[in-house]
Structure formats: C-alpha cells, structure tokens
Length: 639
Image 1 (tube, helix red, strand yellow):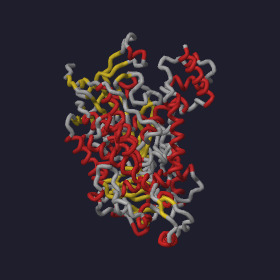
Image 2: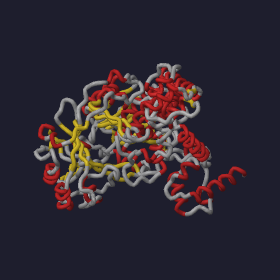
Image 3: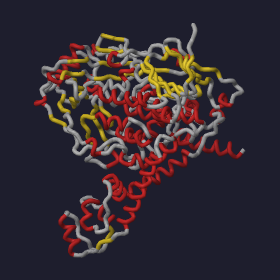
Image 4: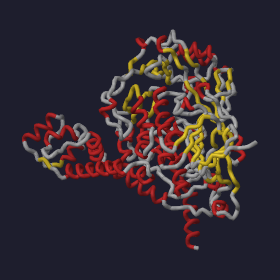
C-alpha cells in the first residue's frame, strides 16, 4: 500500500477537553499541530453533565486559565447558570460551578480551534502509533526509553510524521455502552468508538485496563412538573472563571436548576431489579468511579439512606432536554422508566436518551513520568481520562500539562513541573503517576494537603509566572499579576501599620457592629481579624484607604484573617520541598537496597520515582522504607 506522508510537529489524538487544551497549547507555542477527532462536530463534547467546575474542579479551571488554557474563557462565554459553592465554609473550599449550554460550549471551542494559527483539525480515526526502537548505545536507552515516537497512521493509510504525539482518547478506546441487557459497541452518546489504536498501544509495550463510567437519562423538560421541586437559582452577581474576563460582560439572565429526591418506592424498584443491572450481573468488566456512583450502587451500598438528591439541570438555551444529575444508571429501559417516574415531579416524564454505562480501555498506572510522558516511549505523552481520571476539568488540566511538556521537549526546554504545594494540577498529576488508583480518579479538595494556599481565588498569583515562562501568558498579562501582587502586599502592610485608638467614635463604631470595644490602640489589620468585621466594614474608620478592585480586597482580607494558618501551612510546604529536592539517582538498583521490604522494592521499581517525596507517596512504601532509602542514597553520594 502506498502511503502519503505529512510532516508536522505534534499529533494530538482526540479533541475532547484534554485534546483541545493540548492542541491549543502546542499551536500557541508555534508548533505545527494536528488534532485528530472521530467527529469534528463534537469537539469539546459533554457526554455527561454539561457543567464546568464544582468542588475542587473549579480550582482546576482557574489554574488552567492562569497557565494560559482555554476552558475558563469558554465557559464564561457559554454558561447558562453560575454559582459559587461552599460559601458557608472557608475560602480554601470555595469553588465556582457553571452549567453550560452544551451545544454552544462545543461550537465555541471548535471556533477557537479553527481560528488558531498552526492548528489543523482532522476528522477520522488514528489506528497506529509509528515508533522506532532505541539502540542500547543511545543515551535515551539508559534513561529507560525503549522506543521513540515518529508519528501516527491515519485510517486512510496516511502517515503523519511527528516529533511528539499526545494521547487524549477519553472513553473511546474499544468502547461499549450498556443499558440493561442491551450492549452497543459505540463511544459516548452513540458516537463512533476507536477500535484499532489499543492494539498498537499494546504492541508498543503499553499496558491497558478497563474502566467504566455512566450517565443518567436525558428527559424532555416539557414533561416535568417543576412545582414539586425546589428551585435552584444562580448567583447575582456572576463571578467569572477566567482572570481575563471582565465581570461586567457576563452579568446576564440565568436559567434555574431544580432539586428533588428519590424515595423508598424508587429504591424498591431498583432492589427488585438489581439482578438485571449489568454491574451486578457481571456483564460490566470495568471498574467505575467510587465518588460518582450509579443510583443502583447508592441504593445497594447505602441501605440506610431513604432518599438521594436529584438535580434537574437544563442542557442548553435552545433545547428542552434536561440532565437528571444524581441518577446515573445502566438498568434496562423499563426499569429506568419506572424508577424515574417514582421521583416527585418526574411522574409523567419522557426519556429522550436512556441512561447507560460505558466501558473503555485506559492506562494501567505506573507508566508515566511526572511530565505525563511515557517512560518507555520517548515523545509520547498522555492526558485525560485515558490516564485513569474522570471529569472534564481533570482532563483539560492534564491535556494542557501534557501539551506544554510535549512542546517543551521539542523546543529543547525544561519540562513544566507543578508540585503538590503549587497547585491542584500538581496534586492531580502526582496522584496519577504515583498511586495505583483502582477506580477512575476524581479531584477533591481533601486530596490537597495545602489547600489553604491553593485557593481558587489566588490561582493567577500562584501560576501566572509559570504560564509566562513557558510562553502561554503574555508580558502584559504577567505584568498585571505583578502589579496585583504589589497592591496586595502594600495594602496588607499599610493596614498592619495603621492604628486606631479607643476614642469615642471608634468605640461607638465597634458597638454598632457587635464587636467588643477597644482597651488600647490596635491596628486595622487586627480589627479585620475579628469575625464580625471585614475590610469593607472598617473602611468607615480608615481615612487613608484607596479605591481597590474587589479581587485585591479579597486577597488582602484573606491574607490578614488567615495569616497564622497560612504561615503554618507554608512551614509544612518548606518541609515538603526538602523531600522533593532530594533526588533519587537514575541508576539506582532497588535490589541492592537490602533493608527495603519486598513490597516497597516492587512498588519503587514499578513507579520509578524521581525524588524522595514521590517515593514516600507510593502505596506500599512506608516511612521506614523512606528512611532506608535516604541512608542508601547518602552512601551512594559519598562514594
């Protein structure tokens, strides 16, 4: 067969949320990039809930934006409802969540890709990775690489020669959808699966496993009785995701979501038919997400719960279709109809699209470097659900990270690294490359040890510099962040050095705001620390205050109110950094570390950590093993 050869810099396989960010990053860094997609009409498609953000996921979107990614900008353009979650708690867990117009989000992202210089969209299936073996005399061989990527093969036979390839295949590899006894060999929402690439991956020494995820039914909104549900409105004013979005431009009318609940009747229908569920009948091979279970899983695993929340969420401005959040399922259609119609407000509902579970091939852990490059194939990177994660935001974060690092490798520049103390993206990547993750990985605020430092509100202050260093943030954007930092620092210092005394007007002010009166003079910063007072409240007794943007005021207030906690967490980070900077020699032979337990030795060989910090987070490696390893490395260094 005669092959046509095309020469490019980067091939991105998949145009979901990971693929879009990866392709845009590479193209914006000046590399000729082709993003391959099974359907050019479903770029950045949302087969599950059409929302962006949420608890911890909102942090990821803000960090993507801080680094120069697109997701935050795109949801700001296409949301139909926006809400800040967890506002009754501290700022560390505040998370922005926006319901998207499903079609608009996809079309808007497609338009961004189409208009991006150096980027080409190509519809069709990539069937094969093109690689060459690395010679034993090559330096790359000593670093663990056995093959080098040279391109990809398109289903037509065309070979695209490429310097790097990024796998962003999502849930499409050998995918099959299950609805009761009915099995269809398709990707999500009936889209074409990718059936050929898995074999090529295995042939190149890449180990795969099966995961599964699921989605609820879509309803005709005209058949729902909303009077039996609680209305859930969006925020006013709306806070944007992107640091580049002017808040004034996104204040618009929002749609409502609705809350209802399952009941004992719902649960009894499920229990009586549980043997018909593919999950419990043993038909489904893949492992599903623990933190996003199907409704049948909820009923069986939490029998003490007599109801579960169900959110009814619109899919867009120009459709009556709604998403039934909280009731994902793979039950047969007749059972689905019965259980949905047992829920208040859904008694007469009509299903537009049945709920289903989807199984797919994904990566067995332990095969990726912290750069998201494969350990055994030079130039092959991976991002998104293929890495064993779940969620649009996790996918987009990995896609951006992998795209940046593929570009850095081609340009001969250092990889981008974000550690656990610098961002949720760092936590996400570290967990994916150091942990077994026996089910699809979902980001949560509890996974971040330093979450008080890694708030969504300061993502630009933390990560803009890294985005600037890799080339995705302009000098103008970076200078704005430097100016913002300067304003925050100067204002905090001013408040600490501005004092008020126990004069009559100050005492009256304190009493009026339910705060205890002063016995001696104190600084304005000390007053802000009082829970009943705030920066804006004390402005009445602050004659030297200047007009500052709300985002600066928020940073000033958080810095002052949580100063002690922030300083304590920073000390913890300093200790963490010491272990991260303690490198493990590339040529270490763990079999020579005689005092290591067998399990620790096996896990260290599998994950091949680059530093002691990473080694300490690998499951099966305990503190005693780390101590043994430190002693051995010190002895190696003394030789």
